[in-house]
Amino acid sequence: MDRRAFLTVSAAAASALAIGPSVNPFLPTEPALAWPKGCISSLPASKTRRMAWTVDDGASVDSLRAYVKLLEKHEELRMTMFVWAGASSWKKLAKPLTELTQSGRVQMANHTMSHLSLTGATDRKIKQELVSTGRFIEDTYGVDPGPYWRPPYGHIDARVIKVAADNGFTKPVLWYGSTGSGTGVSSASVLKNCQKWMANGRIIIDHANSNATVANFASIRALLKARGLQTVTITDAFGA
Ligand SMILES: [Zn+2]
Image (cartoon, rainbow, N blue to C red; front, side):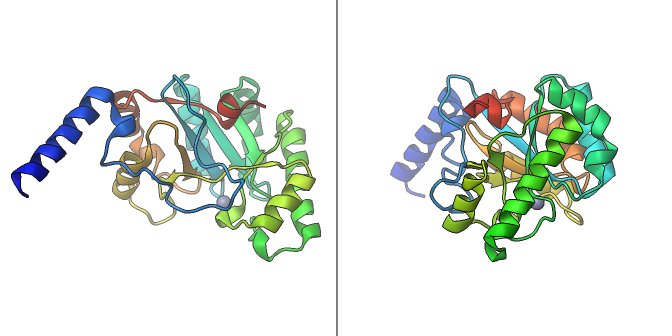
């Protein structure tokens, strides 16, 4: 590296330290994936430094329980859960999840009944998947899930967006970056992803399918503190 380049990098690093990590030049400044028009992957600008931690699926009841315990223990935490209504854990943990939901610290949003790829589904099937999951959330937790939903696998296109909107699901929430958690994924690799993506204004996708993220919570908490971030639900940021 020549001296000029060295000075430029040093200045950037120094200003990142001074101004804060939201402008850290070493963090990604674009979402991990390019989403179609109308998809949400960042939070609106705010004076508060904040991040939306979103948790999908609930394929493992043990994993979903670990998130519930985390939320019960750490009252500052707020999360949005994208409910795959066909997974039995959502019903099994209905009692603590209802308490968390009614307190406003957890937002329940729609992630379909069968967790199928909607881009290959008929209009009728898309409607059925979203409407039945909306009813499930209302019946199970006593809250209206509102317009927020997330397509399984992030499979979405203009037709899916329109069919969902025609049925009241007008706000498709995708993500800026992922914890990468999942079965067979190491905690170390999840932590690296958290360091890469957990920054101001971002929507982070996580999955209650393994314990890889919760196992890192002490480090994640320290990371959020160092970056001056608080967690918010999607509704906190966008309104009901
Ligand atoms: Zn999913």
